[in-house]
Length: 626
Image 1 (tube, rainbow, N blue to C red):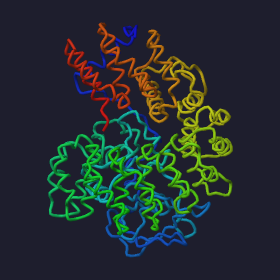
Image 2 (image 1 turned 30 degrees about the vertical axis):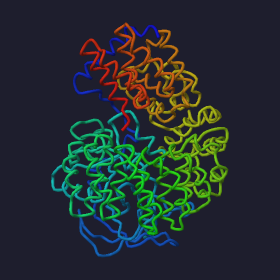
Image 3 (image 1 turned 90 degrees about the vertical axis):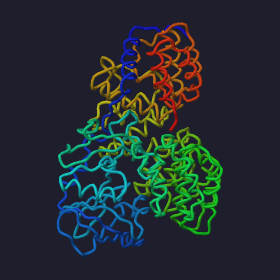
Image 4 (image 1 turned 45 degrees about the horizontal axis):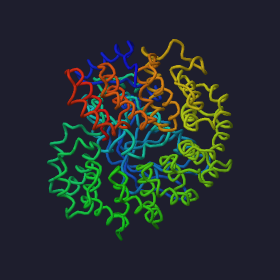
């Protein structure tokens, strides 16, 4: 490989080196729905806030009965609250609401005279007063940006905030990196806690009213994940609690830390023989997520999936989904659970498949019959979408969900699934979008632009409607046009669509917005962008990549084998600038460059200067898979 030594990259490389020698590289993320409210805004607007408990959900009338158990703001009441939680166009209750609304489940209710917002932890819904009845309102997919976590944590946090203090809360990640919360929300990943990315914030009543205004402010954003490494000692202690519930919760809290919780391995192994089965299940799932493999943990979960106790089967299915790559030996065992007689257990198995995504492609065929199950078709569609191209060809029942006589929630579930699966059978989703996009609200327009981007060239016929939306976002329509065509490097595309590229995308506010959007597309489209990635790789080989913005090198993750071969060869070059650039570009590729780790370690050992050693160490750290 030649010509890594170009002046522009060397200047940028100096900035990377400086960051590596200090605190690391920090990105900036712009909002998915810029005007999404913060939790302080929601609290301020509410006339009353209370913790409520589910009394029951009537399956025929779709009326949810709630009772108040704790008043946080306003005056308490003994009268039950009744919400009709079915959509207006087909009596479809949102799957996340069905999943939550079992007797005894709790939520936090924010009320005004005409509108209520109910947070049930990892989901929200809005209800409006109509003719003396509370009915399901518009979709509020922006609200997980305000809060996403346990109900008890939210309730206690609100009490602290109202008393004038700070509360450590969790939200969908927004502002911490370039992965774009918009994609998680557009693809309905809110009910997949192991998939959707969350962050910890310091919330108080003086914080800004919109997420956009606090998204990258270190005064509010603490760090990534539901727990931080600083909490490890306390969590390790809780693994030995005499209370089984505390032990199980500690294992679950350790799980999101992944490899960072390696010190918990011994304690979790001990819990595999715990007298409480739910503790064993939680420990097994956490152990597989943290270590990647453990035969006894696999045995614990295998027995749980085959249990005669329906509650244990359900809990185990959820645990398998959260176990990540370590659950590979258990995926085939999910097939019989997908056919379980108990609806909620089937739902848990579907959710596990959705959480595992492409790794669970072997059970994709078992999801297809569920596309005609009225109670599970939306979730089955989302699970197939998470499997992605490995679920091709698009199943006929999924296309059937686009029919005009289907409720809009069902049709949208089909569109988002088909967009992720792709292939020639996806054309009906394009036809649906052409017909419905002009009448969608802003959130619907935003999400649909993302679906078109995922569909690629087959969506060419939808370009006119895509470029004629009312979206305030100046980048998304242009990014959609690029992703549909996918025949050039995005920073070399001039004037294509609304917003244009003008003078380039390397810096300034516009550059940050471009980098956010396109980096997210690189991650989501993956190897579908391989031909474009190879264009960049060829330019690098020829020394013609001088105008490539730093974030543009992330595109190489879409052609990992070819990119790794070329870059690792450059790590042994006699030219210092060539070696340094190769290391940094591998770092930009992230986890996709994990196969290069041995070569990076060798490069560290041979690095003649501290600067080069730090650069390669940074790159190695960036390629580690959590």
